Image (cartoon, rainbow, N blue to C red; front, side, top):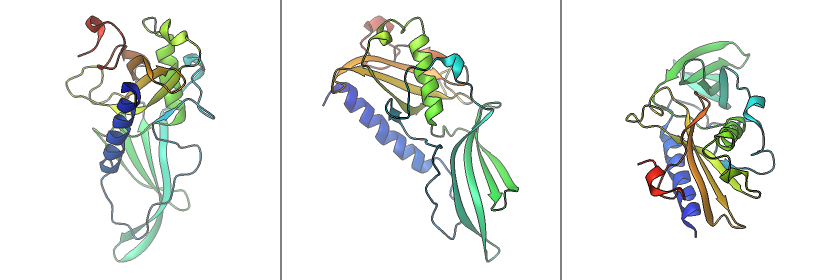
Length: 214
């Protein structure tokens, strides 16, 4: 297995663990149902339904991007209360939020989820791909045909001015070859700023050592 693919798989495992711990539990009377189509929030690569060729100017995100939505039943005061729970990212404030609706659609409650990265929608990942391709430091190497683009792994570090609290940073990992065995690029993109903040990140990056982000 290549270094790039091993790194992608290790990030995926870490992301799944983070996702399991990312939302404070609530007392429920029924298991959460799967989110409806169109609200994908998992790490993925360009393929059917996920494009790595769109221009960033054509991708405009709403102020609040819904990440996950499902019907549930809360146990309140000894009674079962049917609700719809939604997790989203508020781009106007740079924070994850939870909104709970009555089944009829009325908002029952909303709370911020600071320091929680949330997953990424397909559109957000397409924006990350676009910003990486358009960055002048990466544009030439990412213009090569047949590349594999991966994204969806959140990056949050309180010591990093670009990717601390309030950021929406995501790894973009690009490989080449039929099996993705050749590392091409590894960058960090902040969707809040709509820019590449670390074009050469990680030890798997093929850029010169002097350019690799520590």
